[in-house]
Amino acid sequence: MSTKDGKSSERGVSEVVDGAEEQRLRRSYLRKADLHLLPPAFAMYFFAIIDRNNIGNAKVAGMDVELGLHGEQFNWIVSAFFFTYIFFEIPSNIILKRVGARIWLPFIAICWSILVALMAAAKSYGSLVAVRVLLGVFEAGYVPGFIYLTSFWYTKRQQAPRIALFFSAGVFAGIWAGPLAARLQEIDGSLMGYQYIFIIEASITVALAVIMAIMLQNYPETATFLTEDERAAALRMLANDKALSYNTDYRPRQVFRALSDWTIWGYAIIFWAAATGGATQAIFGPTLIKAMGYTSTRAQVLSAAPSACGFASQILSMFLPRLYPRFSVWIMMFSAAACAFYAVIATVENIHVRFAFLCLSNFALSPNMPLVSIWMSNNVMGVTKKGVASAVTVMLGGVAGLIGSHIYRGKDFPQYRFGHIFVCVCNAVIFVVALALNLYFRYENRRRDSQSEDFDPSALSKDEVEDMCDKRPDHRYTW
Image (cartoon, rainbow, N blue to C red; front, side):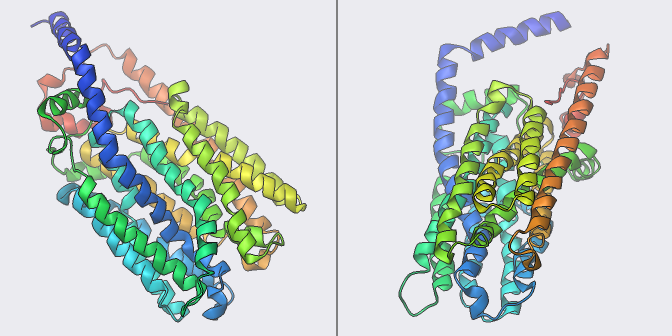
């Protein structure tokens, strides 16, 4: 069959596939997939962020005084989490592919919630560090695991709002973390207030993990909640979009291709720089606000305001790629604004102005993590390469937490100018790297457009096509 005839046949199939009944089946599939994936994933990420960052709320509630912490010990307790968080993300995604998300994600959630509850029993600096190190092992797999999982269920266009919604749960957690901790620390019982924070929040995570194990399914090919017609329509839709397939084997060669691809590290650097601001706001927000002269409980409650601004902007980021599908442009705009806002916080002394710009900076910071995650997921192809790319991107977010734990130093109280300048510079880095990726992807697309030869995947084996990943001549990058 000639190329022309082949294209005509493909159009004929498309006309059948895109009929009214096919569209109805696709809508039904998406409703069911969203119902089973998004609510448990959103709720679990909400409490993952609370479990990770409630150490900051515990400090404001008096943990540091009770355990006799001094100097930079609290900063090292915070950063201990990220030493293991950094290194266990890639192994976690490999395990997820082998055992399935339905088992792996609830399992690691139960493990980390047990460790959070154990922090209530810690009696020394050393025991807190040990628990936080183990906590990082299990929390490491959740975010890259969910991003990877969506690649099997949704087309690239469908992934964008769902990943943005997922990340908004983290900022939404910031709205409630302070007020929730303020109520829990006031419980009149046999324990210290900060111990109730750890125990009760960890218990909620265990309950959510059980619900996730019931609701979650691994792949559309094996999902029991789909009818056969819905499954067939979904698989046709995903195949047309070159989405990942569950029956593709793990390929070690793609691990090295991912690690040697400079664009993967570009996404990761953007995620790192964006996460530096996000992580420091989440952990040190109550401390920064308390340093402005507010009481402990008042600072916990007021920390919800910057998080509310960040949540609003992350919800907004769900729709921005549909309005203008140029991820690099949005990322550069938000990073430039955040850079300017942090410069103001670092230079002014009026506490009301500083608090206002703390809220504005969180608005500008928050969209870049979901935007770069979606951008990466849209551009990277190959089952194993995408899994590694997701893990590497989020892995550098762990590096952000490790570094960010030490930029708001006790000796800089009350202005904390060094930390604000550091985050300002991070956003300048985001702008430069996003610009570099923009220019490279536009150049590479033009180069592939100019190639005269036609690419025929049918002339190659399935394994050969899979191993080409996003270097396929017919693949075009989103910039």
